[in-house]
Length: 319
Ligand SMILES: C[S@@+](CC[C@H](N)C(=O)[O-])C[C@H]1O[C@@H](n2cnc3c(N)ncnc32)[C@H](O)[C@@H]1O
Image 1 (spheres, rainbow, N blue to C red):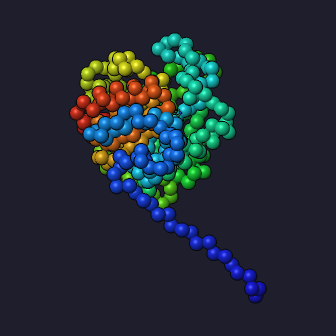
Image 2 (cartoon, rainbow, N blue to C red):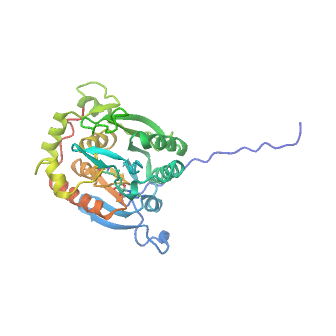
């Protein structure tokens, strides 16, 4: 036998330091970590309802935030669709361009961006926390691959059917009428939370499938229970509309399925804060980040309106 030594690499268990106070999500002003430049500004802070809106780039902001501090993340990232194309809105031909933030920088750079923000989200997720990411065919494969590269454990791909999807004007494709939401745990060791009984009960006693369809009655119910001041469309006009606003019912179901009362929810691309509105109505804590001030203002208005409303029932309408 040769005298060669076999080197054993002993894998070190990762130690998590979970912060005691969940809303201490970001490092406080006094912390030395920022150097000269703070990566965000506090746009809105309402401690009595546990909600904060931060203005800044989500990657830089999250890289300065406490690790292992967030229970659930919902992310609706840029789909990189603003490439000068056209679509149909309210029967009219309109540009698909949503803003500079939605412009593609090419396949590889877009994928690198997805890897980076997902890595930043993974760091702040608690060990048993989960992340939901919505996307269409244009971005979701990159997101899924980036999740696998980063070591997330993909739990489900939810297909969400959009009943009122706009027609395809070119008539060279099928109508895009679905979106995918990927649900993933922080890593393979995570013991993620799933409110299986509630989802089953909401689905009339049957296991809920990964195919979601919100019908007219659900939307009406949502309007009645959530938008009590006026119908959703009037509300949207009143506050202004985000070009890629998600339906409240989608976020309600996601939050009910994967979080408990009082949990902290983060939305790194919050836009008009549909996530924040659902979080307020369901008694969860919320931190939203967006780089655009106009969207944060819209978020603030919607959140303040939601705060004034009574919490919605947990069981009505989720199937
Ligand atoms: C698809 S929209 C989210 C819409 C939101 N789900 C809603 O219901 O209103 C994406 C948002 O991400 C913001 N954004 C894009 N890149 C960002 C970045 N690097 N950091 C923070 N926000 C960003 C955009 O300003 C935009 O409002």
